[in-house]
Length: 423
Ligand code: ADE
Image (cartoon, rainbow, N blue to C red; front, top):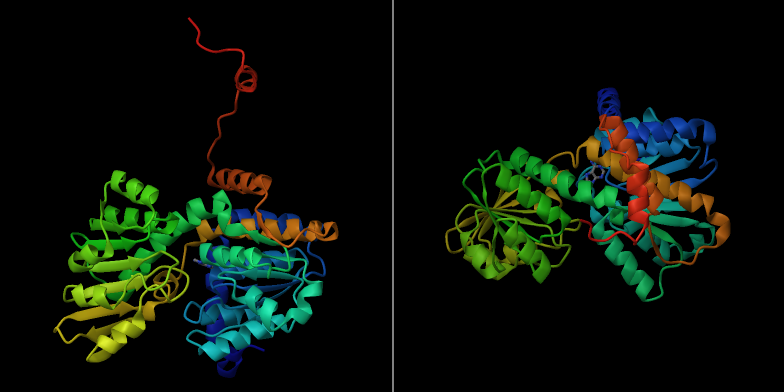
């Protein structure tokens, strides 16, 4: 069983259970799916292998799949995001084999993915595509029995499209990230809030009045910029795409390149999905006391090796905060070793938003399993539109929000081309 078992702790199990229940009470869409599935059993006998951040919200997705009849196993999708109490409760209370421990080595991280693959999943779930990558490299022997997979995040979808483009992808995969009820809300409001949460828990600095540089103005960057502005920071956006840069300008932010932003920023957050967007020359230009964090999936956005090479000394000054002293006398503070700050320094997105993301995951898996006999071509699939709509409707219902209905006259008007300008 998972490695946490070596330091078995009844309190840890109880704490995990309590926190999982707390999140469950904020996930009404997932609850309604689980309730329906208890009778329907759409995943009966299906082995699901998941590689996701091991959080209270993920635990509730696992419980939902289990309620639908699936045999689930789970490992972490990042070495620093695991919540050990959740691992303990999943293994002991919910009987879901979970292979994860916070702060594991890279070797153990991949060992845990291998342990999930050892259970011969018929459906894979990823957040960053590490599980499906290993399936397509080290464990190709398992491919024949795989119905398909799902992917939670932008970075993973980019990797899967690359696999599809070079002909490597051997199974159908649903890009859950691209559902509107996922990225409009999870990437924007979830990342926005949880990134602030991570920065504040790690540093407890005042953000009002600070120059806050957001690198990347995708859905996550937009969310982070909005929350930073809301708390009183002066937001500067760095972006490579002209349309997104224009949007950032009209959203009211100063937009410039990294060379200029590096010299004026006091807080830097990366959300690009790209390599070394903060590099050595940027560190050299930063003011004393600059705080640097990453909100993207992988720890590649900040060139940490360059920072290490430049530094005269490195010290841990608070949990999750390393101080790098540079030869120019300035100090740079790196959060969470450049791993995603919202999950490493806080708890990730709140349950209310993961409710929608994970409802898309659950319903996409049902869609994959229901179509198993159709021999779907191996490519990246969009979440079916009806699933997106169903998730939005269920969420609105749970929130007690009323939707306006079209009248018959309005429905006809929208379906006809005959009526143009009128008196
Ligand atoms: N990704 C971001 N926040 C998350 C959370 N709370 N649980 C699982 N995956 C996440």
